[in-house]
Image (tube, rainbow, N blue to C red; front, side):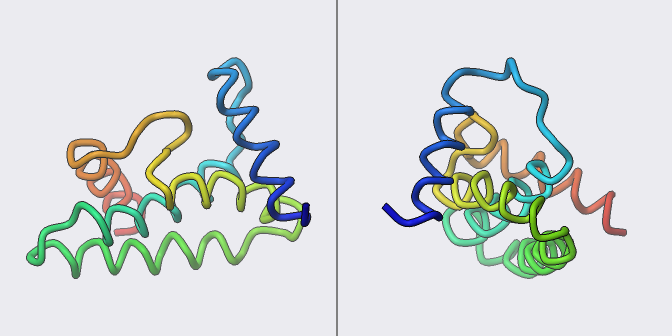
Length: 108
């Protein structure tokens, strides 16, 4: 099994155990970047695409700026969020809208 798959499995196990562990800032950044990709592709209406696209770029830029070790850890939750799992919660329209509003405030 390659390193990325091992990291994803390890991260999935951590998330499956619940929220007993504190979520690092790097994990939040990774989760936000992955969530914006998921929400853009699966939830956003055509009229919202520009809003999600801008946030997708902002969150990915923040993710890229993480130090290598932190970025590797953030990759696990980023990939999970890209599949619709945002820090243990399923992404749906309501959750995507809530994240979009919060991230809009953060970046503007």
